[in-house]
Length: 638
Image 1: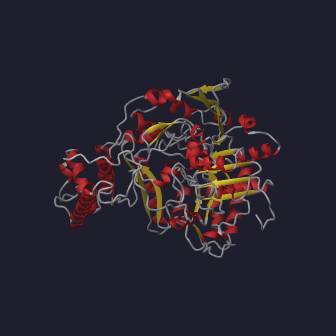
Image 2: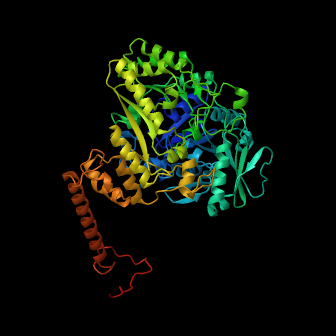
């Protein structure tokens, strides 16, 4: 502030991520955008949430605090699918954990309120967006209230917030209050017991009390929420929470090509803040020399939050805007000529959309590509192919890679795209996400069948051979997704064995807020058909499913054997070419079992030692605590 000659700021953004001035990070993008609008912006990155000192660092903001947990939901950032603390944080310097609290939006909003009473607090980001209404929380195993009820923010901005944040700043600078902003798209607000909820063009969801006590009501709420996501026809949603009401206005309209160009053309330094010194930020290393060409996804996968957050309508940058950003990469002395990724949530949806805008404005279909590709969807890869050709011809560029996931059913429609991809844009390995092989599970996921994956593999190998290259697919699969049983996972393992795939990275299903698959996990029902869905809830079941995906790893031997014996598939144990594991355990499996047994013995000994410690006051080992109600009581003899 001193360097800029500022004595005050208009807006203070608070984020749980390290600050990186790169368009892949929301706070940099929103901060640069407001700065371009003429506002003074300060960014408070990973503050100490245990007191208010950091919140007062920039003084009282003239307009508002903008609060976000970061690029990820803080609970997903902190914990694995098995609810164990993660070893690192990709969005923190040095990958350090513990630099943001659990449920960061709640903690940050509370501190902002305490620091400067009367300053409006606007919450946003992925965490606030996906928790804007009553939702199932996997980490507490219960249905929680809308986040606006718990964080006490004045407004929640959901979805991509560029247009909303600019409108909020402009209107508040004109003297309007947060109450005046309730007419905006893409915002959520709460009404007190004495305020009447709106009724025009409104859908009333089952109340918080109903979805907490009735799983069918939870299914109905999920179905209604997802049917009201098209910004061209979505209605306002209301949901009672006891005597109060949460109101979610229709989603923001998608950005135009010109608006996308402006947002991504702002003067980012593309570097972390200097205060981090030489500490590496893992997430930055991944996207440092990448270029995002579009946002949104019309795939509608039930386990994915991208569609729920970024929208189903593809928003693309212009051809020239992308090339200008690639040209600016040359200003970075660390740029080695390799663009690490040119894509977005999905690599090959650039400039694709419905060919009939009047139909798109009425459509409530959740996926444009499932169960079949909509006949009105424009799937021409021509603009993308031309962009890829021109990108690799830019001065100083040696190679342009595609690291984003490929939508295989779309790619197969364009042989030219397949040839260009295989010949110029794959560094030996190409990521794809078939996710499963069981037809029923794939239908619940809204993913194409395994035949589509096999056909894509054949065409990719053919194109690679024509290019004189030896390249491979890296398929991603999910274990323990709703609908996935032990039998279906065994069939998936057999499929992998027969086709020679050994996935190095597998993903355990994590029920993230508001997703359709999360509703299936919580209720055990498909919210659209109300048919029962198998759910692997227990840790032991989830471990078996994960082990089956990597049956070829010796350390997984005993888990795989247990799964096969439990399913009665003894035919897959032995020396046959179709067998998943041998009859006798390998040395690595025995070593792992021995190490686990030793750890259990050590934990048991530590637990026994703690239980044998004398009570407080007898030896002083636990300290003298006369304030405790139990002080002075004698331990009951065994």
